[in-house]
Length: 337
Ligand SMILES: Cc1cc2nc3c(=O)[nH]c(=O)nc-3n(C[C@H](O)[C@H](O)[C@H](O)COP(=O)(O)OP(=O)(O)OC[C@H]3O[C@@H](n4cnc5c(N)ncnc54)[C@H](O)[C@@H]3O)c2cc1C
Image (cartoon, rainbow, N blue to C red; front, side, top):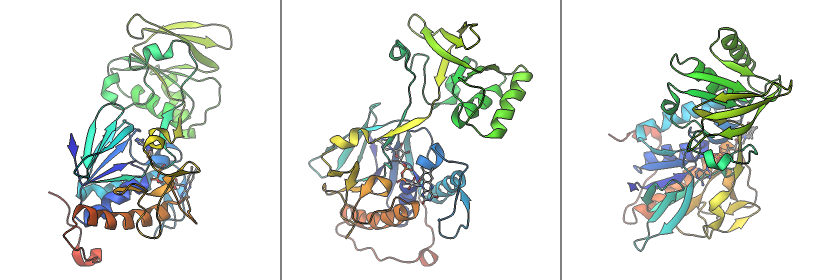
């Protein structure tokens, strides 16, 4: 059981900034995210896009902002449960909440902050009849632990940044054999990545199939072969250890809708006149996932919500103590040992 002061569901920009604000008040945080990397939409949808409306940054790339938020949170040593979806929440007699992930990891804290953005990002799965038979038995939709694939034969499908980034990563590992399958000849991924893919192909470090799709999976207990259908009619059976269909992620509000929270237009209703608490005392909702009159889905607004929510969380966690707000220049950043 992971014990902390605040369980934050969602490691997007708003969840990450909440760690910093909580740390200033000597509260520890643990973040849960279904994605294997922190950053939410910024990492998953637009890491290379510039953002122009973060105060103090005339321009910053989304990926850089995530790196900076991680750096800012670092002194407060947040815990992370990544690659797991928060599935259930249960209130205990003492007022604490237990949040359990789909994978079974349990977390306990007196306060929960839902910073789930547009919802949990779920992988877009290809339509192949026996796909479920091989899920986690050779078919993986996210790369959580790259070590799992080292020394193996890995085939990746997809034409976006995630597919190409991982194909490049594995092509750079001398002990790992990698192939990339894409249904067209043009790629959505960054131009530099596409150039690298063709360079690796020419150097014999990567097998490339364009105008092609994986249409069949075979294996006894685990995946051992994929069938590649090519537009030129030369279908191929390839022996593999892993197939990674990386077709992007689509957000779903998911299990949160069953947590007895007041939901309006696919978002969680909060009281914005005080502290962004939901209808369940002790559960807050901050960032894109909440709604209230005048709500704006902007990073800046999520940062403000996180700051106020953490003040209220402090009172729940330390009912007998009074916290006096001091500027960070006065009190400094006193991280956790
Ligand atoms: C193309 C694009 C451009 C944008 N440009 C700007 C801009 O220039 N400026 C600006 O201010 N905003 C911009 N936005 C909006 C901005 O990205 C969002 O406001 C911001 O990402 C919200 O942050 P968040 O932390 O609330 O949620 P998110 O970034 O959505 O992160 C939420 C995280 O929660 C996780 N999660 C959800 N449910 C669960 C669960 N049950 N279990 C585990 N994990 C879960 C998700 O996987 C996700 O990682 C843009 C958005 C897009 C799509």
